[in-house]
Image (tube, rainbow, N blue to C red; front, side, top):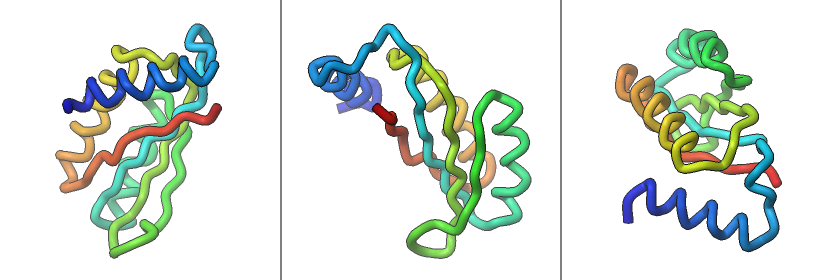
Length: 104
């Protein structure tokens, strides 16, 4: 199953649960980077593209979490665009994009 398929399945499940997909929702994205220096360098760049940003040590290991949040529509196009942007940033710094979740 591709990431697009997983996103589509999640969107469909949210719709079945009664989430109004015509309204924006708060999405959180998880980006892991090798250290706090990189997290602090990336945070302002990520904020510039419209996300609120928090950095902290990851729950496990020695990596750092960059937690991004922002309002967005729950569409495949919106999720794909965010994923591609964040995967691109992660690849440049030996980081990992670890997906999204929605507050409902």
